[in-house]
Image 1 (spheres, helix red, strand yellow):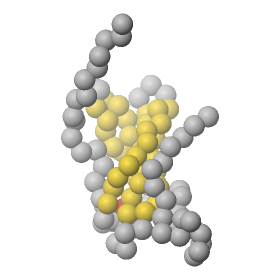
Image 2 (cartoon, one colour; image 1 turned 60 degrees about the horizontal axis):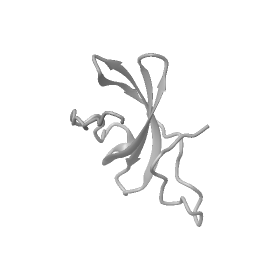
Image 3 (cartoon, one colour; image 1 turned 180 degrees about the horizontal axis):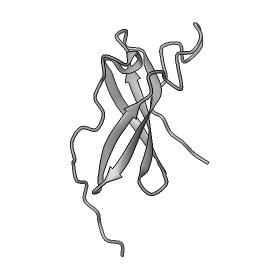
Image 4 (spheres, helix red, strand yellow; image 1 turned 90 degrees about the vertical axis):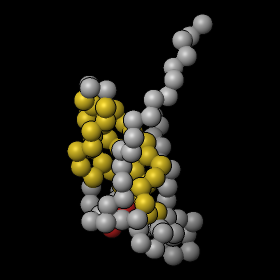
Length: 98
C-alpha cells in the first residue's frame, strides 16, 4: 500500500503583472515542466484588461523544496485566434504531453 501524501499550501506563486499586457489583470491555471535538476518552465494562463486569456511562459528554479520565480516572458506563446475562430477571445489551461 502506498503512503498517502498531504497537500502543503505554500502560498501564491504567480501574481498578475500590470507590466506584462497578457497577464495584467489575472494569472491562473498553469502547468510546470521540469527541465534538469532544479529548473522549471511554467506555462501560465493570463488575462488582459479586456478579460482575454493567453498562455505565456515563465522560468523558475527549485530551492529548498520551494519554487522561486525567476522571470516571465513579455509576450505570450499562445495568443488570441483570428476573429470568428474558437480562440478569438483567448486560450487557457496549458498542458503538455509526449
